[in-house]
Image 1 (tube, rainbow, N blue to C red):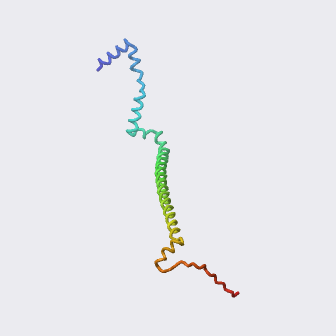
Image 2: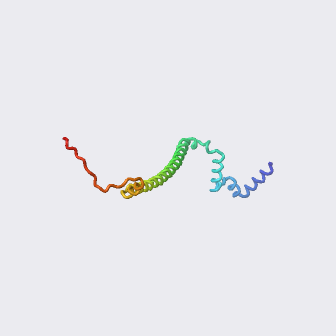
Image 3: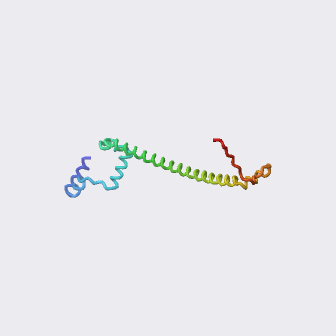
Length: 137
């Protein structure tokens, strides 16, 4: 092993550029930083940093807000569907009311009543109605 170090030292003495290249650490590129960050998050190492521990309350607050937002959107959607169903039911009831009202008006006409009562022996009066007046004060 001593011989290998001797050869490296001789090469460095002969060529100073090799020494400068070996001493200067290589700066990580963009992809290396991204990869390192992803591995740190997946491994859970980022939770050990002091900055991350200080932000837990804020992260939980944001998670709670996200849950409330999702629950609110589901509630609004369900309420909207209920309103639509009630509007359809209201229209159906309104149509039923109009139909029943027109049927009642048709059956309560004087000519319709006279026709229905013809078979029972009752007849329509042709004399006007007499008024009874009480003379007692």
